[in-house]
Length: 70
Image (tube, rainbow, N blue to C red):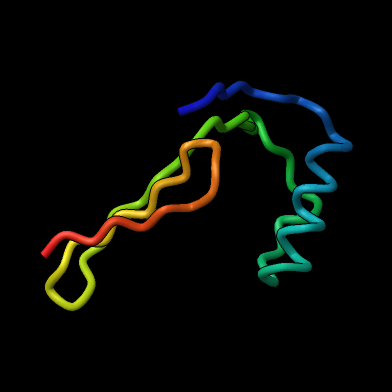
């Protein structure tokens, strides 16, 4: 849940690729991005299967809560 938009700001793009390279070693420096979508998230979640159980991670704008269903 949130709001996404295309941001054409070369300084933002530069900070993004520098951070991406420092954190993950993925080098996109020198490339142009059109579009580059950014988002303001109000919450997020993920779902995965783990040891035969469904695991959900909820982040509704508060502390994280894990729900397991078998």
